[in-house]
Length: 192
Image (cartoon, rainbow, N blue to C red; front, side, top):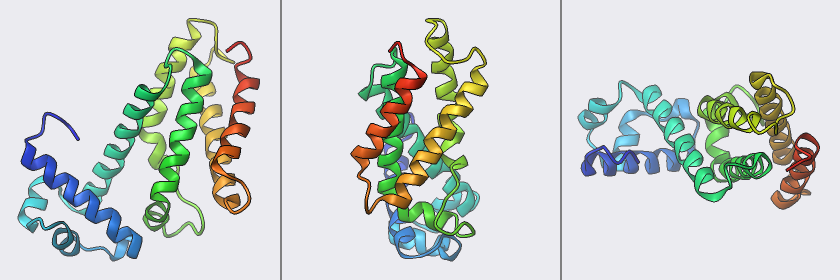
């Protein structure tokens, strides 16, 4: 939560996010109303509308906040100077997020059966990876000097292996998916 926010606002946002994820476990996003969300969160409608124009603005905040928290976890849990460690931790945290919010992600993208949009995840993760790739490039530790291309390659690998894992979860553990990603990253970053 943004520490600059008033404590009451932080608690309101936390209650709304908790209620939102609970409701997404029960129904598709289109079926959730602001009334339901506010009722579940024990937040008044005028309070909701004081902070968010509508449920779509709220979901953008939820996605932003979830990504922000994910990036903070990555910074805390990894050696951000090592490309292999950084990218493997990004992938692990992405799998954790998919596992934790899988039902919610599917309900946010109802038009894509058995799939969801990774663009939601990329919005804030991509610039962070690009920033790190620039730093790694100064150490000669990236596969291409074209940072945008390298970032797209990495994000594409993340997406495909994540989707593969989601579809194969009954037979492939998260640890096995992580180990397969480690093999790929060793091919891309052999010196790390």
